[in-house]
Every structure is written in C-alpha cells, then in structure tokens.
Image (cartoon, rainbow, N blue to C red; front, side, top):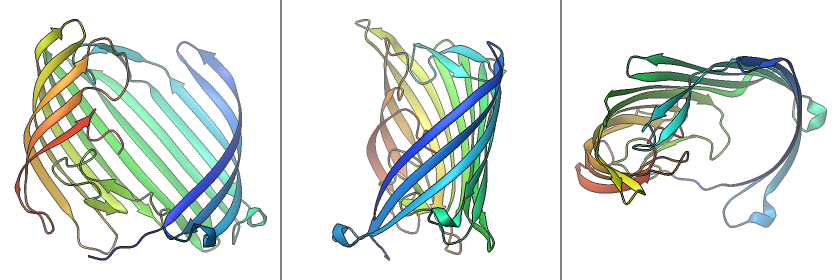
Length: 294
C-alpha cells in the first residue's frame, strides 16, 4: 500500500471587524472585513529543521444574514436533557483577495459560501448545512472544495429517537492533512482510523435509539440503539472505496449536561468486507454521532 509522511506547522493570526446594520431577536444583517497572516512550515516527520517555510497574507470582505430561530429539543445529543437546536436560516458570503506581493506565486481571489437551513417537522426537525470555498488565479481554479450535510431527527415517542444523516463533499488540491478522513470515530464505525481518505467523500447513517433507563442516581441515563453505516472516501482518479457496517449499541448520556459531544456509545459492530478489510464482529467506543466532523 502506497504511503507518505508530511509534517505541517501553521501559525495564523486573524483580525476581524464587522458591523450589523440590522440586529434584533429575529435575526441580523452584518457586513465585515478580515485581515489574515499565515506562516506554514512543511517537511517530513524527521527533518523539522529543514522544513520549507512560507508566509502568506489575505484580505477579505463578508456579508452575513440570519433569521434566528431555535427550538428546545429533549434528548437529541444527550438521552434525556433539554437542548437548543438551531433551525435558523443563515447565509454567509465571503470574498478573499490574495495578492502575489503577500507571498503567493500569482494574484488570486477566493469566493466562499456558508449556508445553514433548519425546519421543524412533525415530531422532530431537519437541518441542512453547505460550505464551499475556492481560490482562483490567472491559471483558473487553484484549489477549493464543497461539502454538505443533512440531518433528520424524529422522536415518535418520549423515549424513542430516529436519526438519519447524509453527508458528501469534493475537494481540489487540499492541504496535506486536510483531506477527507473517515474511520472508527467518524464515518463507518466498524473500520479503523484513516480507513478512508481522499478528496471525494460521502457518508450515510441511520440510527434508532430507545432510552431504556431515563434516570440513574439523578446523574445519567442509559439507552439502547441499532444502526447502519455506509460511506467512504477516495482520491479523484482512484477506484471508489467504500465500507458498510451495522450493529447494536449502548448509549450513556449525562442528565445534567446542557451541551457537548453527546452521549457516549459502546457499539457491537458487524463490518462488511471491502477491498482492504475483511468482515467480522468488533466493539467500538465513541461519543456523539459519527457524522459530527463531516
């Protein structure tokens, strides 16, 4: 199996200024500017002193608007606690300018877009997030990426929850270490860490959860879950690599926690074989949802 090692050390400073032309409990409209300076050192893992050093600077302007809306949901990330879920409509547009006199080989500019949309549905909610970034130069598109994630959470009963998620993305010329990376804690949980890496990714997950014991010593709750995962990551031009698993698990959530990574999970997973890993049963540990970082 081909492999490579690179060390990247980045030091970054950012100065932001913004003014809201409209602000109320219903939302806001904001205009801002940003100035950023970065120093990046690249080298292999054994020769830090001989690493290549580069210094860059960028200037950006942005516009952001939001129609604020939050809903108190019980037992989404935790098992029984109340949580604020963001079902607002938020849109942010940015334009970054990268002059060649600030460390770049040629002048470039980079539009970026971030969008979040939420909606209440019967017995639950759904959210959609999209993030896109790019850098254009005289030679065309130098680098960039687009990724999105959709979540549907339903609570058909007081102790029951169904969570479905779909994520996907593509990249061009990502920085070393910023490629999509699935395995173990994030992505299909039946595969080891870094099992799927690349500039193309997708991940789907469905989980049914039942709170078996709502309260133990007024500290935590215990639930049971069953789930199925399917997803993968690969590089453009390489064979598509995917994996799937299914299983059952134990969920332990704090009653007093108001935020955080969510309930701890202990899963008994059956992994389906792919081109690298064989099938079989295994136990995995984690917290929150396996789509959180996608």
